[in-house]
Amino acid sequence: MLCYSPPVSQLPLSIPVLTVTQLAQRVRETLEAELDDCWVVGEISNFRVPPSGHFYFSLKDRRSQLAAVMFRSANQVLPFRPQDGMEVVVRGHVGIYEARGDLQLYVEHMEPRGQGAQQLALEQLKQRLLAEGLFASERKRPLPAFPRAVGIATAASGAAIHDLLRILRDRLPAQRVILRPVRVQGAAAPADIVAAIHDLNEVSAVEVIIVGRGGGSVEDLWAFNDERVARAIAASRAPVVSAVGHEVDMTVADLVADRRAPTPTAAAAMVVPDRRQLAESVREANDAMRAALTSRLHRERERLTALRRHVRDPRQLLVTWRLRVDELGERALRGAATTIRLARERWRGTGERLQAVSPLAVLERGYSITRRSVDDAVVRDSASVPPGTEVRLNFARGAARATVTTSN
Image (cartoon, rainbow, N blue to C red; front, side, top):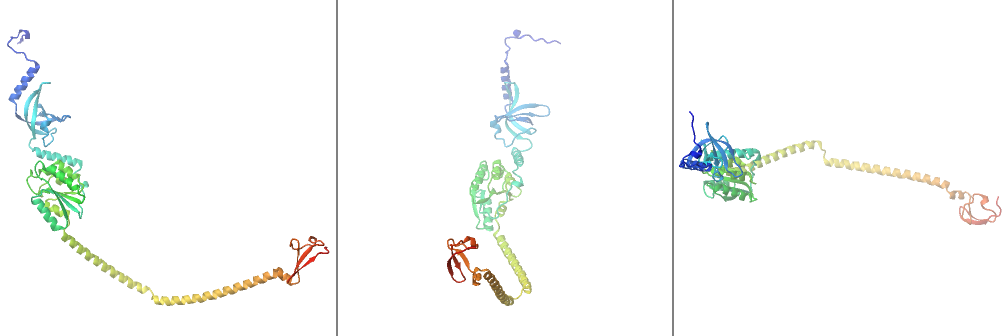
């Protein structure tokens, strides 16, 4: 069968002719009128976030897919981060993007299917902080044994602060405590807890901080699952003890803190020693020291007794050394006398030898020394004193002057 379509020029004048834009607008108006508010379930794919902050993605099932957009004004309030493969339930309206003629779902609300948005956001936060190493045991610090001051960030009223102060005073009455009251639940609580941690770190005496509150529902404790609180605990100068709720409760603050206490009472017991245990430790140390000193004294006495068997009486030694000194003194005197006698004998022999060669001794034997008067030179050769030379004659006793008459 052949179908015939008349040309536009032959159409009746009563049939309107639409432009593409007009048709797109009519489709949009029809869709908005019929699907102005609808709920759709599907799996997210092709999820992307451009610099504008809008969410662009596709919702799909086994047979179909639909382009979707969630503008930044709507997605800013989402407590979780959508991702590919996540099954969600969205609420919005269907429209057409006239520029391309694309059918599009404009999403105003989104929640994960089968899991609460809040719980999903918590799991995503845990995974992110775990990847950054904030839960690692290596970065967690030990608590000081005797903190100068304990900082507490909790509500000013309620069971938690009363339990904390009661235990602290009972364990160590002199312990200094600085309380920074905070809101522990509600929308404003996370920012207040962060500010409290910062304020307590500004006090130099604070060497450990307790952050927490008493028990409550999951919603009551939710402020301690906030990312801002987790990062403030991780950045704290002083070690932080998290004491949120009861033992069965586990928050992000517990995972990031340097120590986790199952209750506020347990937190107080962690940060200060018990005075009774300290007293007992002192007594035990004192007893141990006394026992050690007694044992040491006993050993030293035994050692002294053993030494006495090998050490002579000092008085006997003194007598022996006195006799020895006398003996050595006499020996020294005898040696000195002998040395002097030998020296005298050597000096006497030397003197005799010198006397034998002395010119005076020669003169004593009748000889004389002749010197020329002009230069006092000793005359050894008669040629040096021709006739007429004046000479001086030195005798053993006295001298005489003469004039040479002949010289041979």
